[in-house]
Length: 145
Image (cartoon, rainbow, N blue to C red; front, side):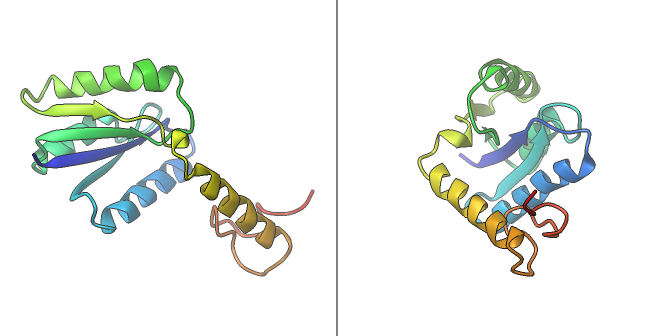
């Protein structure tokens, strides 16, 4: 079985938000754990889940794992993403698919939270660097108010 991975977020009207997910997916793909990795947005932006699913299959995937880049379960995870994935899978008979749990349920999220807070605090305290968490200029994002 050759597995494709779709990392899906909600999608945003702000192009820079969508670009961040696409950059994350490209970085994750470069790590080499999965040969086929695509970013997708559930709504408001492209590529859609269906388009990313199609791209995985076109690249040779015989199974597609859709991972919601969400913190907690909700209707999008329980209903919307599985429905959109099922619609895409219907175009590809024989391709198996799975929607994973949202990433926020992973025990290492506490470490991610601590690293984010520490990076923002360092930038806000004037370490002269861009925020290590979001990449923003410290003066623009990580400042004490």
